[in-house]
Length: 103
Image (tube, rainbow, N blue to C red; front, side):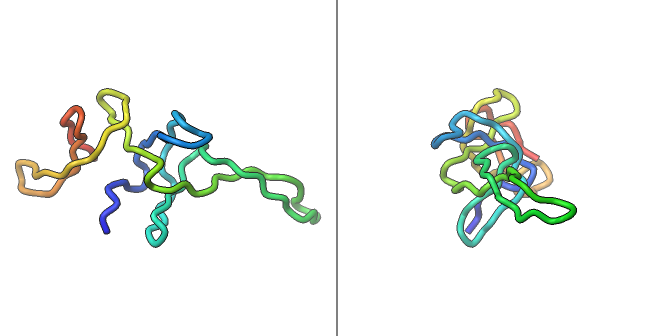
């Protein structure tokens, strides 16, 4: 299954407690259709106290792929993806709203 969203893409959360927040995709978990977005869906992790570390740390939890949309770099708004071919005949991702080619 092609997800359309890749690592280091800019996305915006469209639903949930972090709705409207933007971030960069850090990791894609393909089997469960989830992504980890920088600074979104933060959860607290209680770590056992040792000599070096301990206490409460915050980290990003995964979010379902259906809850994020790709951010169009030209209009700075969420957009759907479509595919097309460039002048060399290679398959490229295109923002549906503005028609710009995404890297």
